[in-house]
Length: 285
Image 1 (cartoon, rainbow, N blue to C red):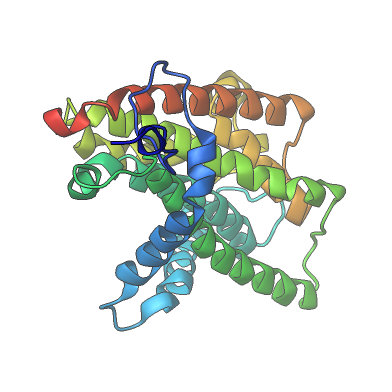
Image 2 (cartoon, rainbow, N blue to C red):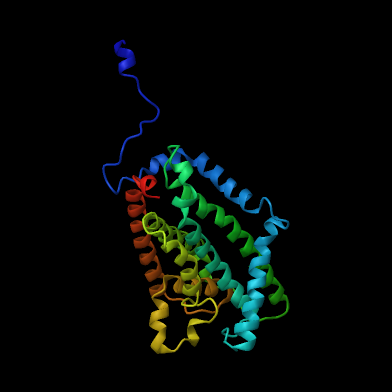
């Protein structure tokens, strides 16, 4: 073997991480085409054998909004801060749905993709990132439905208006995505060893929704309990979302600042724990 072949430069060198903080964002960027393929796969496989296909993007929030309006609005008589009930509930459902979908699907990423992870090398963060991106498509469709309903009620003369908070909307999307991603990464890492947690995630997320201002405005929460509801980082995000689009909601710099700091911490912890677990999860899953 000559010296030229011994000093050959390789396109890709796979070696073990030396630090928990060695995320290799450059590798993630280099595999962006794979990210796109996973997003396409998630979108197609989920609705491939359904009769109505992507129409479920519309059916699910519409049906949920009708149920919430009937149960919480008409039967329970919960206030909606003077907003049309359909708009109030659909705004909460749209924002909460994106977060919960990111969390639920990311929380099982190790278990659902063990076969791929055990055979092929690629940056493992590509998989949860693809889930966040594919859910963004669904969120976009449901947001369109929300905007159409806003146009309908505006035509009917309902009392609501957009505010300057709309400029924060892209930032709110990032917060929802990263909060769901970080939480899901922590859970999927833990469930590789403690599989019982898988059965609690979906149920726990549903319960957590009632600790967020999805079905009631923060203004109606008694002062004794308001501080606990505000500890949920999604409360500040949903209140800001309603304030931006509908002009109602207790939006403050403190609340959105708290949600931002909480999201950064959760995402940071999630990536660290995910990186540590992915080294040997195939042996424990």
